Structure formats: C-alpha cells, structure tokens
Amino acid sequence: MHKILVTGGAGFLGSHLCELLVAQGHDVLCVDNFYTGGKGNIQHLLDKPNFELLRHDVTFPLYVEVGQIYNLACPASPIHYQRDPVQTTKTSVHGAINMLGLAKRTRARILQASTSEVYGDPEVHPQTEAYWGRVNPIGPRSCYDEGKRCAETLFFDYYRQHQLDIKVVRIFNTYGPRMHPDDGRVVSNFIVQALRGADLTIYGSGSQTRSFCYVDDLIDAMTRMMAADRSFIGPVNIGNPGEFTMLQLAEMVLRLVGGTSRLTYLPAPEDDPMQRQPDIRLAKEKLGWAPKVGLEDGLKETIAYFRRTLNA
Ligand code: NAD
Ligand code: UDP
Picture (cartoon, protein in one colour):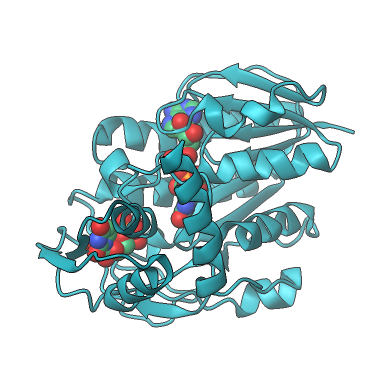
C-alpha cells in the first residue's frame, strides 16, 4: 500500500482524518507546521507504527514518496486566517503549488480541501457547484477566500496541463471534538461560553445562517471522494443542508448546556456572508453519501468533549 500524506494533519479535521486512515491500516505521513493545530490532537497516534509526523511548512517544497495526498494545511477560522493574511494566501497558493508539484513527481492522487467560502456572500441559495460565487477580492476575508479560489484554479490547471489525478471538495462549516476552544468559530465559541457561564456573543442581528456538518460525516465524504472513480474530480460540495440562524444555534446550545448564560450582541464582521446552505445532490449521486448526524446529536458530542477539555 502507498503512503498517504495528510497536510494540516495535526489540525481539527486533519487529526480525525489521520485517525481514520491509521485505523484502516494505511501508512500515514502527517505534515504540519503547528500554526493552528497541535501535537495534542495526534498524541494518541504517535506510537502507532503506521503513523509518522513531520514538522514542515507547505509554503516550502517537500520531497517525500507518497501515493495519495490530502491537502488540508491552512488555518480555517476567521480570527486565525486574518492574523497573518499574507501567510494565509501563501499557504493556500504556494502550498497548492508545492503539493501539486509533489503529486506530479510521484504521480500521486491529490485531494484539495476547498471551502464554501469560494461562494462568498452568495446570491444563489442553496449553493450548487455550478455557481461562481460572490467574493470581495480586497476585504479582510479575501486572503482565505481568494487563496482557496486560486488553489482550485491551480488544481484544475494541473489537471488540464499535466493530467494530474485531482479531487476537489468544497467543505461547508464543520464542527466537532478537537476544535480549538479559542478558535473563534461560532460552534466552539457558543459552547465554551455556555460552559463557562459567559454570555453568548451574537455578531450582527443573529439572522445570518450557516449549515453545520458533524466531523465524522465530513471525513466519511472526504475519504469516499478520494476513493471515487478517476473521472470524478469535483468540485463537490460536502456539508449538511440543515440550515440554522445564529440565534437558533445559540438557543440550541443554551438548551443543551443549561446554565445561566444570556445573549449579547456585537457588531457584525465585515463581509460576513448572510446565508449558506450546500446543495449536496452531486455528492449523493457520485459518492452515495449523505450526512447522518443531525445538529442536536453532533452538538451533544461536541459539548461532552469541551466539558472534558475545560475540566482538564
Ligand atoms: P485547523 O486550523 O484546525 O487545521 C489546519 C491545519 O493546518 C493546522 O494543523 C495548522 O497548523 C496547519 N497549517 C496551517 N498552515 C500551514 C502551513 N503553512 N504548513 C503546514 N501546516 C499548516 O482547521 P480545520 O478546520 O481542520 O481545516 C482543515 C482544512 O479544511 C483547511 O484547509 C480549511 O480551509 C478546510 N475547511 C475547513 C472547514 C471547517 O469548517 N472546519 C470548512 C471549509 C474548509
Ligand atoms: N458568529 C457569531 N458569534 C461568534 C462567532 C461567530 O455570531 O461568537 C457568527 C459569524 O458572524 C458568522 C457565523 O457565526 O455569521 C459563522 O462564523 P464562523 O466564524 O464559525 O464561520 P464562517 O463565518 O467562516 O462561516
């Protein structure tokens, strides 16, 4: 069996992916510069003979021998990707060039973790893969959104120009255990605030929507895409179509956690998309995949995880 490279493997999604691949018996090389991820996420894998960890920044070339590449390296939460926006664009763009170059040399199949952010603040709802998006090229979110769009361009050009074996998935908001407690994303923020008895921070009116996918469903879809027929390259939306306003999410978290927290309103961030819901008909048809975990069940698992983490 070929070695599988997971870039960003010490992050939230990457660590779940590494865990599954190692459990399936694959030889896994996890590459990460620990910008937002941590060794704690993969600690339990370090003594496995089929798991290897390499500290490396994907904006620099990497020479290893692998048969498959999952390219996940990139900070995903707005506060993290906006902290050093130039580095965020470099990670997406130089990182894609380096990993595509590696795939070209080794003839490895390569999967890009793209994002619903390529649709920006969408006028088409729900978003289908055919929609080109509405992205501000010069705003505070652009380093991430445009970086990921350019990475998709590179993937498709390497496919057309060098016949590379590519796969592109567009991931919608995903949550679950191992999200960083200070990561700033809405699910982790609300749960940590509720567990600490602090008020839940609603940005803007709270009427903006997101569709939240539980991590296990997401990883299942990603590995199905990697295993799919060579002719199906994507892009394919992966997410849970259940759509909620931030107020609905806050109320659900408060009900599940209990306690005395209330809601507090803060200004909306610039260019905050107002609505987001994946159209997942393509994933259903081509991957035979649909999410199984509803928001309430996924939140219960995530709350239990944060309870343990915060107590420790
Ligand atoms: P995360 O921040 O937990 O993980 C990203 C990982 O990449 C971290 O371990 C980080 O240290 C590493 N990294 C960052 N820059 C790097 C670099 N230059 N070189 C090597 N490693 C680097 O985020 P996540 O939620 O696990 O997201 C993983 C991927 O999935 C990202 O590419 C993200 O854009 C994409 N994605 C995630 C979501 C989501 O809701 N979680 C949604 C859409 C897309
Ligand atoms: N949000 C919020 N309170 C928070 C954090 C986020 O109301 O404490 C809102 C944010 O403005 C956005 C939504 O929740 O409308 C999702 O934000 P997140 O950062 O999780 O993801 P993204 O905006 O990248 O989809």
